[in-house]
Image (cartoon, rainbow, N blue to C red; front, side, top):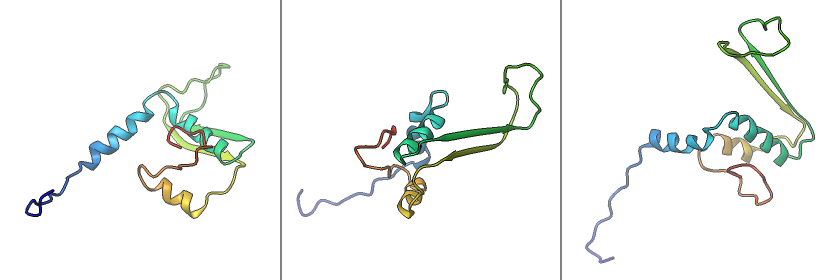
Length: 107
């Protein structure tokens, strides 16, 4: 680059960038699968998912969640406790775990 050339700032449409990243999670239940993979990476031997909806369950044996609103979602595993670094990664886009032994989609 010649000395008299100028650098120009590069703009980023953050909303579109986040939308593009989130398309990686476009299939059914992919977020739940990712959380199960995260539990596996944390050496968990158990994983519990509890979904509470706003309407009572029907009397049939089958669970039908169509038309109901999820009011609480609990995920529990017995893996390693989140470190300060883990919490920072959760709050930062595209700063995933680079551990080659992890199995997550972005790990």
